Image (tube, rainbow, N blue to C red; front, side, top):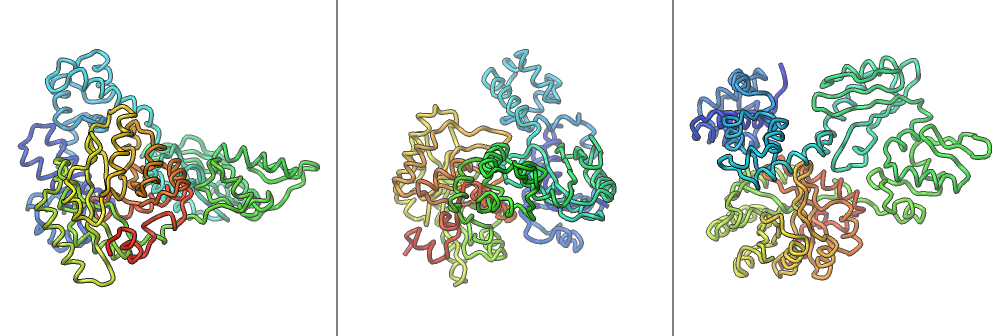
Length: 577
């Protein structure tokens, strides 16, 4: 039986809701599935235990029919009702959901009126101007759809970091069951923790006699869709997710050099070869050799390689040729932040706005992570689509936070708000209301298409506001989906530095915003950084680790990040005493 978890169940329930909406079913019925998906996603109890005990049917929002379907799905790994629904539509219909602005209602219109059920058909129809006169669309919508299709094409062979990380770990764990492996490691951009991954590189060291068995183990890994090439030293497969995976087998004495080379980046490797040449050595994926006689200079690991070249060890995340080699030569590399340094986080949503979990549930999840504090920053009143907080909601939430804090002397909930930056750069509450919060995350959620100069001025004006504590997701980008708005981040970071304001690394893997390149500049300007998950449920707190990866790429040390402060230090930083 296929294993299925709450994320799988929530995803299937949401797809059912979409399919029912495409069919034109009763909106109450479709909404029930969307609500159930949200409820399941936010569960803090074990879903399997709820199903086994029958308690799944007692959860608010899960009626008898839904409970039966969820039980079937969890216990069998399959749901005939879902499979039957999918048969009614072309398998490509969900491609259309990847285009910003295309929801079920618009897709239904395209399908019913123009028989469009794939991106190819949609692009053709746009190029033929068939959407211009279609009710609910028009020339501007057609133009935006074409831009969305172009973005999807651009990133069609790219993957979010967590997708590649999970796939790589699964393949590597499977490979490691083979006999004869001495060392094995993920290399490439994944090891460097790039935010977007093209393919997966795995390196293995073993004797030649064991290579065939290792490669057989690799190509039989779960999730392999197609074997592209199979050899004794290199094999390639394509996974069902679409990710290409390459495995290389080298002799163990070559492993450190191959690991360094295949980790990259290309620019880092070029400069490293230049450094080797200055030492009258040659460096490549096979080894380190003396120029005079090609004699091998043995190295047991990567650290040895760097030491032989007069450098301190450079962590993989920094290998982007952004000054790391020069700093390593001077022994001035930063002591990079680690996930264990994190003591809490601040940009989290609850059921007060569009989150899936209550304050108490978010607090409990943070406690389980051994954190000292958690900051709640629900949406503000302008975000009506996310049930932004009214003044009455704010007061009610404050009372609940105070009540929870009174029950604990070792953990604290901070009461924040994610306040919308309006078009003129003002925040969407008056000063008296903003005074009530422990901190304010100021974020842009509207009018993304302002010219760069206007957007920059808008955000800087918000940064200068007395109440602004943190600038949230500074470019508004959604990786592989939406480019960030046009903004001069150098000016924004300069303003944050001048006015003593912090900027977040939004750690949600679809954002990872602030970009790591600008993180480094913010560090140089002395701007404090918050690593915030923008969590909308308890599981979302785990996304902090992706933000730590970006922080490391941006040269951050623990002292640069507010999340590493103790509870007392945070209280002082937020000027709450």
